[in-house]
Amino acid sequence: MSVIVTDTGFTPVADTVNPGLADLGTGAAVDLAHTDDPTALEPLLAQLTLIRVAFPSFSDGRAFTIARRLRMLGYTGELRALGPVISDQYAMARRVGFDAVEIPDALAERQPEDQWKFRANWKAHDYQSRLRA
Image: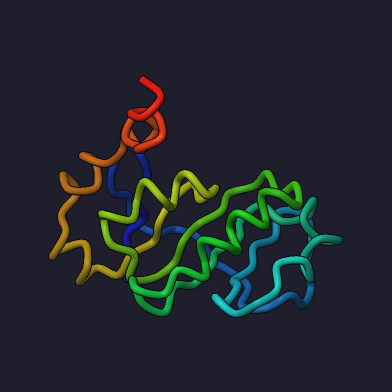
């Protein structure tokens, strides 16, 4: 099982996601690998309500780039990071366009909800704002 992390804390996973692009209809969801080209989804973005982008490990940041590119292409639905993202990366995930992070239960046990909520005020904790002040 998995846990969804948002700015308000943990919630259980309730979504069923299409593993591929076949039979997309209104309100469809899709999973992307960290190596997929997000421009392939451009003609379908208006039909999608959820895109999950997989992180193979916390040390592989290519999914951050995919999230940013999807937002620049105009995607406005829910964008979710999927996999072993750590709480220290939550602010970056939110800044590049992810709405939530879906983590395995084992990671949620090692990094409890309070560690994620501590980083929920992600807009106030970037170095550029501190430099401008």
